[in-house]
Structure formats: structure tokens, C-alpha cells
Image (cartoon, rainbow, N blue to C red):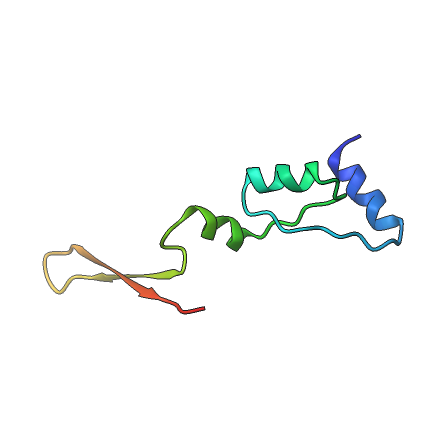
Length: 82
């Protein structure tokens, strides 16, 4: 049975299903082996697990230079606190 079919039947059953969060493939496999009917993954959780700078925002500003017809690109990092 396809995963989408299983998920649709889980929703249609009307039962409450516990879906632990997984942030990478190993965690997803452990959740699957533990017997849970579904796994939850968020994009932010996956990114934070693989990127040491995930809690930083990158601001990119593109503006025409004052002379010469070139373009200036400014990149700055700001750290967000959670």
C-alpha cells in the first residue's frame, strides 16, 4: 500500500494518531521501527539539524553602484535568538 493511501485511511478512521517528529532519516527510521503509524517532519527541524548556522538570517541587498554601471551586492548575517 502506498504511503499516501495509508495516511488517508489514518485520517478517515477518525482515531487520534500519535506522530512523533523526526528531523533526519535516522530519526524517521527509529520512529518507524517503534511502530508509530505516522511521522511528522518540519522544514525548520530538518534545516536546523543539518546546518550549524540555521538560526541566522541572511539579508541580501542588491543596488546599483554610484558609477560605472555595476551592481553592488551586500550580504549581512544576523543571529536570531530562540
